[in-house]
Every structure is written in C-alpha cells, then in structure tokens.
Amino acid sequence: MKVFYSETHRKHEPTFEVFDGGLRTPYLENPDRMDRILNALGNTDWSEVIEPTDFGLDPILAVHDEAYIHFLASSWTEWLDSKPKDPSTLLPATFALRRHPQRPASLLGRAGYYMMDLSACIVEGTYAAALASANCALSAAQSIVNGQWSAFALCRPPGHHAGKDYAGGYCFINNAAVAANWLSSKGKVALLDMDYHCGNGTQDIFYERQDVLTISIHADPDFEYPHFIGFADERGEGQGLGFHHNFPLPAGTDDAAYLVTLERALGLIREFRPAFLVVSAGMDIYADDPLGAIKVTTEGIIEIGKRIASLKLPTTIVMEGGYNNDALGRNIVGFLSAFC
Ligand code: SP5
Ligand code: ZN
Image 1 (tube, helix red, strand yellow):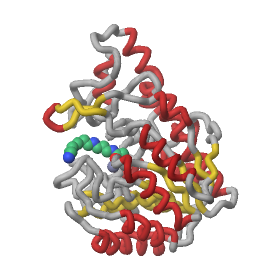
Image 2 (spheres, helix red, strand yellow; image 1 turned 30 degrees about the horizontal axis):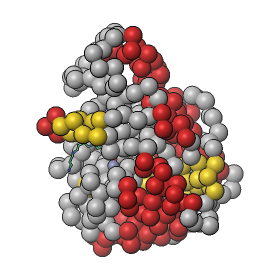
Image 3 (tube, helix red, strand yellow; image 1 turned 45 degrees about the horizontal axis):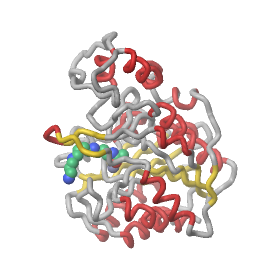
Image 4 (tube, helix red, strand yellow; image 1 turned 45 degrees about the vertical axis):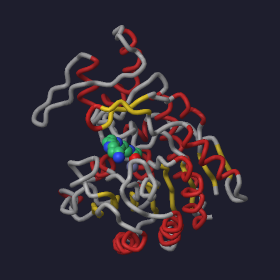
C-alpha cells in the first residue's frame, strides 16, 4: 500500500494547548505520533512510504475561504512583528460572537474570528505543515484515481475539525475534505469519519452538497467536544438534505455496539453507490485513548477495517486523531491491513 507522508509536519510542534478549566497541557497532537506509525509500518511487508506531490493552492481554495487561508499563511510573521511577550504560540483569548461577527483588522481579532477553540495553536511551521498534510491527502486520492484500490495519507496536522473558514481541534486545512472534493469531479464520493470526535469541519464543508455523502460516527456532542455540532438530527441542508448523517455514541461504547452502528453507516454508503470512498481514520476511538471515552479495542479496529474494506470501493484513508502513542502504530497497521 502506498503511504503518502511528508517530514514537513515536524515544523508544526506547539508546546501546549489549553484544556477545560484553562489547564495548560502538553500538546497531545505531537510529532511522535507519526514516528510510532512509521515504525509500525516499517515492520510490515506491504507499505511503501512516498513523498506527496505539490498540488498548489487551487484544490485547497476549492473548499476553504481564501481570506482564511491567507490568515494561516501570514499570521505567524504578523504575530512576531507584534512583539508579543511570549512569541512561542499564536492563540487568541477572545472568539467571534454568534450573530453578525465582523472581521477586524488586528491579528488577534482575526485569530479569534478564524479559530473555534484553544487547541489550534499556530507556530512558525504550522502553515507549511498544513499544506504538506493536504498534499498527502491529495496524492493518495490521485493514486486511487490512477488505479490503486487503496492508499493511506499519513497526514499531520489532522484536518476534520477545520471548516470552510476556521481552524480548531488541532486542524487547520481539512485534508479529507480537500481530497473528497478533488475526487468529486471524477465521480460521487462518500466520506466516512470514524474519528472519536465529530467531523464538524467536514460537515460544514459539504452540508449543502449531494455529490459528497458525509457520515460521522463519534462521541455524542451532548457530552464531548466539539459540543455544538454532531447531533443525529443534522441531516444536511438545501440540495444536501439527506446527504449528511451523524451517529452519536454514548461513552463506553464497546466493539459490538460500535460495529452495529458502523453497519448502519455502511448501508447508507452502499445505497449511495459512490465511485470513491474517503475515510477519516481517527484512532481515538481506542479504549485507552487519553482524549476518548469509547471502548473499541485493537481487535475492534481491525474488524472495522475489514468491514469498511468489504465495500470494495476505491478508498483513500486519511489520518486524523489518535493520541495513545504506544498503541497508535499497531492500531493503524491493524486497520490498514484489510486494505492491502
Ligand atoms: C483531530 C482530533 O482528534 N482533535 C481533537 C481535539 C480535541 N480537543 C479537546 C479539548 C477538550 C479536552 N477535554 C479533556 C478531557 C480529558 N479527559
Ligand atoms: Zn479526534
């Protein structure tokens, strides 16, 4: 299996994020995650790690707001120019209001306007890393179009919380959405998001579209991040009505219960008859994930991979979350093995 991966992610290394209660915590979405996965892939006889191709900005601007991408591109130098007391990390302390927010000129005003939380920390290499990550997803999608049955985009930073014009939850550019939109010019696309957290950014990007079916299985937002989106009654809007599905799960969901829900999602995908499948593969559903409360085991993750692979669709697998670094390598290798 072709694995698209760029070393550029290492330039994105925030030192902290802010948890509930204002707790300053070491950044969980760290470069070590990639090393664990690369190490595990290196012990298989089926993975081939490849540098992504540079697709330029067009496929990114096809799903993201131009001024937002410009903010990502320019904010770091603006931050340093503003001579902040602690220049290590750009993070706002004030966020946009819910009705008629205006976009102000100041850097911190724009940061609050374009961020949804305190875990999308911007550092010097963030934009370069986010671009390389999107190129991994696009390169994997391209290899599918060129005839590979499956490909893995080993993306870092992840993407599924990034909406048309906002960053959040460690995400800046929505890699899976960029790939799905790129594929959609070649045939209908289904995007299945199995990260522990609702794929709110993906939902935002495709909510009014019927040519990309989006499905997210995740911890119920009634108790879990991202809190305000991901409920079962959100089904799409306008032409997109009926082409988005959320499957919120209770804390403690085990392998058996997860697989029941997965089968419902797979049924919807079969019914849609897509030409391509994109999987947002978050491994934070794992039972011992530090952020998660769903209890899927490594064996469960292997079975999830088999069930998704049984759709027999050309599949682009995109890395999202997963923060138990000790288990990350074996969980990803287990998941991918059904697609080789
Ligand atoms: C891609 C991805 O998985 N992003 C997840 C971002 C989640 N941010 C959550 C912040 C709230 C943390 N709550 C801490 C509970 C620890 N038990
Ligand atoms: Zn997640």
